[in-house]
Length: 192
Image (cartoon, rainbow, N blue to C red; front, side):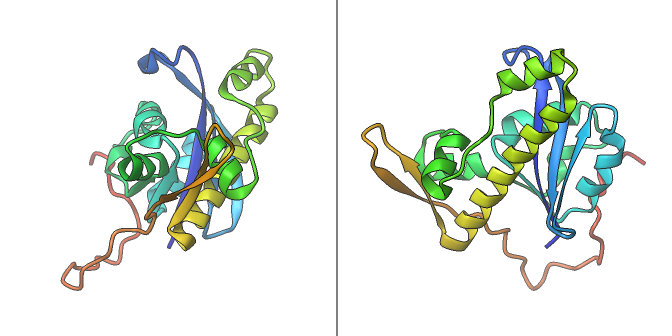
């Protein structure tokens, strides 16, 4: 499948998402096995990757990344085939978990900074640092996705140091035999 794993970094008050701005978007493109980052002036170069993807994958992307990114896109990103890892985890457990905690328990890897640090870098004009941080978040998300898809399980650390399993299903929806294949691999959401 032509999948994209992505994450965004933003600037602004998290309680006012309508006025937050995108500073960097990083993606991992399975088809080319590459990571790329785009600053706010380069988003036009990024949209074709999203449009040609069979599915876009993120963490807390349904309630944060997609609504904010959608303000910059001419079409409707909500219509793209999409997997939000946190949504699957919450549907399985009834709880929300931090990406960093899941990655530490499942993969023994972690994020390299946090969103507040990324905002400080933005204020200082250090866009390359934001790109490096965002790409690390994409790397963590990708590895968690692959582990969960392969093992149907990821892990979470408790306060006592125990590791508890969380059942997940990150597989794409099954395509039924009677569903016509149009031969298109482009998300057609742009207004005509």
